[in-house]
Image (cartoon, rainbow, N blue to C red; front, side):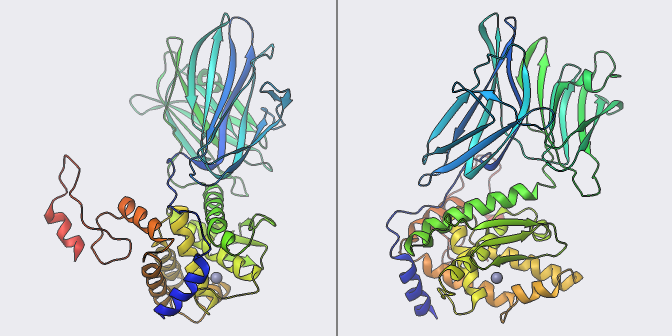
Length: 472
Ligand SMILES: [Zn+2]
């Protein structure tokens, strides 16, 4: 077994000439970029400029980026970044590269709207709003892009700036706002309808007309689900106090998360990792034709690969995986493995069983993409629990995920492969970087473990009484 894996892995990996390191990026980097506010232009007493900054954290791969602009009605918004009016920015960031785009601010009256962007790898982006008064720059306020959420909470006063966007292109949504005073009592409410892809920005006193004078407290925003379940929106708040503007923390609920955006993130990270490793070494271009992604609302906990064309991730499976990007990365990587096999005439690489072979690809791509290579075990365990306890899984899922082998066997096979590929090889460096960053306290002898290091925390100490039981 071991020798077989080593031989197959050698065939697969030797052509990789470049150094590989597990990809680490800022927590705020994402492939989906929602900017809930844009402001441009105005009169001489006050006008606005919006500047977008983008950087690609990847050390080896370029990132293709586009950003589309929409007005309040959801129609394309034309903005001038110095090269004439455009409704879209489209550009490529080289590895570790950055770009900046600033509106000219020349519109005679202030134009507002919002933006949605997408990138082929996680990029870190920032919107910077500049207020220019009497021709002199007065203040810059920075805002990160946000993700859609089903609720949003912010500190507030009557002058609070609120920006809202509807991420759905096929339905109107209504955002309900509640003003809550400092004692926790609800003292006002308002509702803001947003057309498909539409936007609204105003002060809190405009959106909640009956707001008590001198209001100070918090604002809570949420939507009620429409019949299609469309209950997500994007929001952003801007503090205004004594006429001075300042930024506020992002108040999007941490849970539940936007599954669409999380699936797109895993897809792009894994697709790039797949191209970077086996794609290059096998003369396979996964970008041409591009391996497609279909996100399906079917009430079935499943994922598929359709020939060599595209992968499908059902929202139900993403919802089961829920809070683990790495487990989602493994599922995407497993399906990408089927795609690679299909594009190469169903050739076997690590294992003659196609499911075990796809598992191996999933684990390998996770390692290179900067996800946890142990996450396959978590994903399979959740599938086992969902099928065993509640009968949630359809027969097709069992067919797909349980062909010939038990989950225990699949986990054990992945463990053996991980031991193999973390031996000195092209992937040895990835394993070393990974274990020193992610698993520094693993016991010795386990793949992805390294010698124990002293704790660097000043207080509280992570003492031996805590650590010892973890090592047994
Ligand atoms: Zn499969």
